[in-house]
Image (cartoon, rainbow, N blue to C red; front, side, top):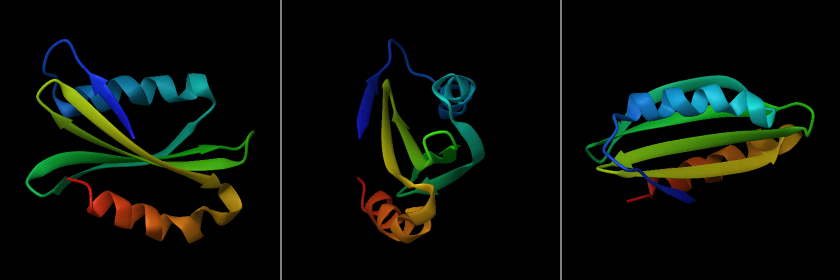
Length: 95
């Protein structure tokens, strides 16, 4: 979990666009992203892969006022599908 304090409120779409441009610098390919709603709040799920390090990530972003909260689940590519269910449970329980 990472909390990112912003200087001013920002639409979640703008925040996601900014980070989506940065992922390749860290060796990640964006495999997909999708906006969703949970408990009356907008969120984004972004699926990433780093084939060099053989890692796959699911990152979920929530935004409230001037705070972005990022939840990241990471595993080896070969076993990511097995851990994805637990990751999704954790995300659904987030408040």
